[in-house]
Image (cartoon, rainbow, N blue to C red; front, top):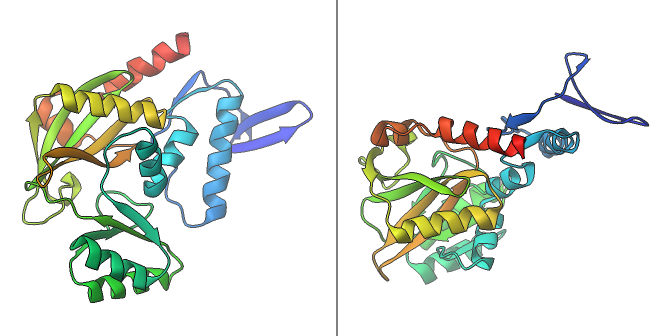
Length: 258
């Protein structure tokens, strides 16, 4: 998809031909290897919306969700409970945070499926991991590890409805991503989980989302770890029998009709 700007306004072009859409479901922005590539795709999606296409999620919401730190910042502003989190560019800071919090998770600022996340309790190892990340000019995202049962919760929200939630039980690993072997099990939605899910989507200005929540056993509370603007749902569908695609398409069609 290419964008053409001119005296006649903005135009979306593909394979040499202009095209228009009433609505578009934006699953993701594809594999990104450079900042320039990311900017181009983001700008193209904004133009797609500018020419009248209804998009879900919005380009801004997708970008916000991809930036883990910025999304947690937005959630904190809206009084959504989150773990203590920092972003540093000095390995000594990561070392200090590990000493302070006891156990931390160091993960990519932009990433998915739990890939690249490392749980660390030794400050020296935190220093080495951080130094390795910084050597390729990447910031270090450090989050206090939340002591929890061997599971987390995935909450699926579409529009103003929580369509379902599941437990994701770890399977020989501290990670609870289904893509890394976790086992999904249906969870009856409580009023508290529902409230958190709807509050997160509102704060992030999203049309649908998969929200990762953990049960903090130290203070008996829920905390939101991440918000996914393009969540996978194979495990969710298998455990609940609910197909999110139907709800998402229905929501998109309703927005187009407005």
